[in-house]
Length: 609
Figure (cartoon, rainbow, N blue to C red):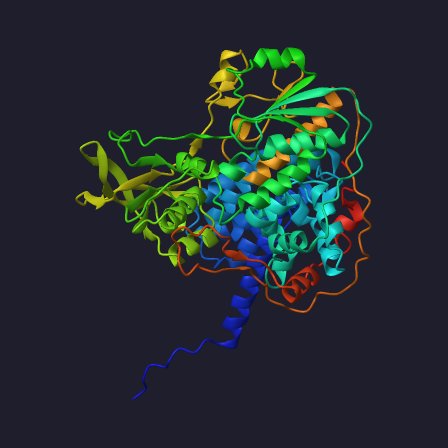
């Protein structure tokens, strides 16, 4: 009698899985400047190699698609081929038996439609339309285009002050971003092709902690030009800093008591200590920035007055208004918006949640911040209520993990249905159970489950369902506004208003600090050009020579967060930076793509902008 054999993964199967893992990391670590035609061709060939060959659309169709794409790359393509590629891909998508075929066709269709100009350029010019300048992948992935390999090399050499100065050439908030940046750059780190992306934010923080001093670059000669900046958040402060270095005289008008915008009013002190933020802001102001806090544009000074009295105006008001659920009871006692709660904390107002059951509606980073803040304000419990799955939350995984670790409860797939009140005070939130449904824009849309609603008791309800922009003052002044967003050209100028620019959240909708910083940087350059100048920003820092090292496989060193023994009232920083040994090992893991790779041949480093 022959029994069933116990499964034993064969060596061949293990090798195939290892190769698949390599392909996955290569895709994650690919540069954004990859030629879309070449990428589509490679993807189709990969899919063809996976085909079982049973169905003709996949077996023959993918091969024909690859041939047509290769003809375009080799200079033998015709404009008519684009219609043929589209027709063929649509046929494969409609008739292939499995996802290997129809999803490969879907990628081709998206490529041809989304990068039509690139395909046409290849056909007509027999060349790639990609910019001749190819930035290092990590720097390209950073919205502010910080010279990441440069400061990695400086940290590895022990030159921490120079490293911070190099960061500030492109991003003046080196300290703040070392603590709270969402580090999109790490998604493009080529080190991922080997093992793990470099801990770029961790090394930035280490450099800030070890730097001897804040060094202000040399300023250009005074131009006599005055620029009004509406909003003292990361975008407004960034623009003001660089304009001051260019020799202009920026003047910030800030509605709140303190400068910093959402860095102060949207991020709790345990993530970004107030004294640390203020010290960095004071450094930026030392470049020669005039400020007027507790000044409301539209009330204390009109938009037209600023346009008339200043040589240029930059509107960077940020997103300081909350969204609503649209349910009765939102005005009940005990119902807060996350924006309102964090604003109160930013203004150092006393807030006490002692012994309260707190519910937080939302699934973003702000919801996690509000939930963890509630525990520090003495809450008995802190429950995060989300209509999608935890898997679909927009919060960073590390933020979700820390919220859980500190004792926050995560309730998924429950949608708010009614706010319960007793004598005008919130007493609970009635929720409707949900289930995952059709995927829309990359995330499954929840839909009501055939189950009875139930009530989650709470004494405090915090709504963290997104921020909004109040642009009514500017709309009333005649500026073009659509859905509360100020309309701008690509150079951030407001059409119809000479010398008026806008950027950050009020243009793009609420986003991250680094995106706001990038907008401020770009707008400063464009305002300088509008005023008739061509100043450049650079630093006198020599980058250490690249050495062929760091190729040994080595895992990533992560920063750790420690939970305070007593959470209530404890707003001390929880994240601990890298040690000297960890930071040096991380910095030396950098593959120096600015020297070894395409970037070294086609530019790679912007020494000035």
